[in-house]
Length: 186
Image 1 (cartoon, rainbow, N blue to C red):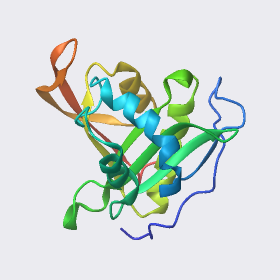
Image 2: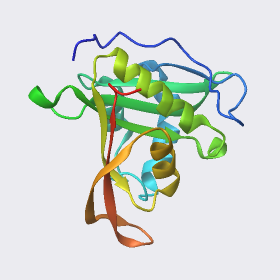
Image 3: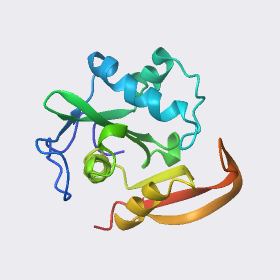
Image 4: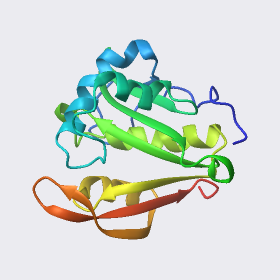
């Protein structure tokens, strides 16, 4: 990567129609974790979108999302209430470190109101500013149609499908998409 982990775009308001008024996105810190954890826990415990163990404890999740070397974590808040969070980090070490991986979570109370879009748009800027040349998602569950639609709308392409690689709690084995966005193309 050519940028430093501290390099980042300015805090930005969400602009999608219906985005909560006053939405601000800023770097998350360890001190923010107690406000992020409820969202993280609620999303992961359902077992329908992430490959994380639904029983992951708060300390383990905090290290993965905020304290791990190379990770950049951002949160979205409205009037001091955390409504979403994302993290980007190198998808691989060494020769693959120029490609980011990203993960996004939105509070159930504000889903469908543009917070996810604002987070993904912000992450594209943050990844460019940090020197990443692309973002790749390794595991987008085929049943996560809202995320797939959003990612596709923002320029991600499906570069591969892994058949039956995700054990959905209701649908059973579903495919996982590998999605990619070349950050050199605007």
